[in-house]
Image (cartoon, rainbow, N blue to C red; front, side, top):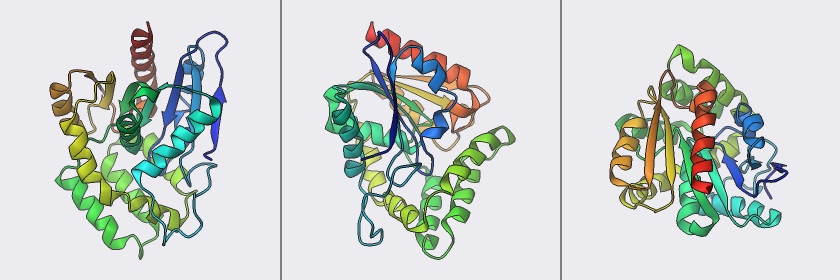
Length: 261
């Protein structure tokens, strides 16, 4: 069972579930918790091997994580708490998990808010993945992670996001990093499927204008998917919830409230 924090609202029945990205933890939502607790019931998850959640299986080299198995973890938490459905908010790889959960359990997802969404790996992203595959077993994972973080979040105003994610990533073990990195073998066909299919669930993409690796593909997806909308946030990179929390919070809360009314 995943480690998670739960905050109950006195009157509102709506749930909001936050899903962080690879190498992060529920702590990356520290600029969201206070505002969202005013309006909704809130669940903050630590994914497998992240934060205070333990890896699912001891032998990391002989076991494999899949997007399905990780999304099953989230459903397990919902079932334990008796949550029939929830609005979901994700960042980075967390957006892939949310979309995968929505494909498998559409009735459990009221809406999706995708920050720093990954919908396609461009050439530079694919080169990064291949470098990671080549060196993941010979270079300390934190060196690779710092390199990836700098490529994805290169500007001075992205520094807080970089440091936050690197700080959380240091809590991972090398074996756990490798197990998560192996998910990249699934990612291209899965993203291709997501781009092709309009799932029919209200979706808000919140993307930093400086998220140059992932923003172009999201713009194309929103043009084709009629249930999707996009807000491009000025002066922000990939981790928009950290770099522009006021905008992220207000846009997300308004979106959920409009879908709930």
